[in-house]
Length: 97
Image (cartoon, rainbow, N blue to C red; front, side, top):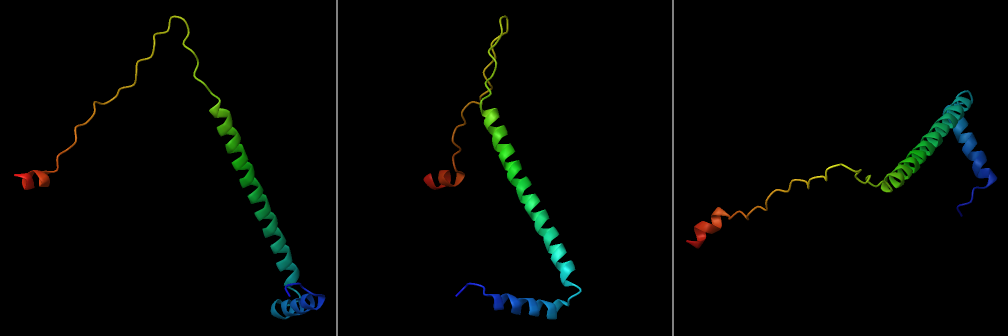
């Protein structure tokens, strides 16, 4: 069960010839081959793109900032906003009174 036997393939070929005709089968096979070649090329290029992105990410992870050279002023700390106070809910203020 599940294995194709030679007579299964023969029946399949006869059905295809009856459905599409003998003139269209070579063209259909040719276009199917082209489509499979295109799909194969596209999947390969997608895998190459993924591999290239991973290599670039690994290369950028090793970058470190340059140390300051002599005579350069130290960098200022980035601006930090003061902490915000929690906002009281007006509904709770009315209920508490």
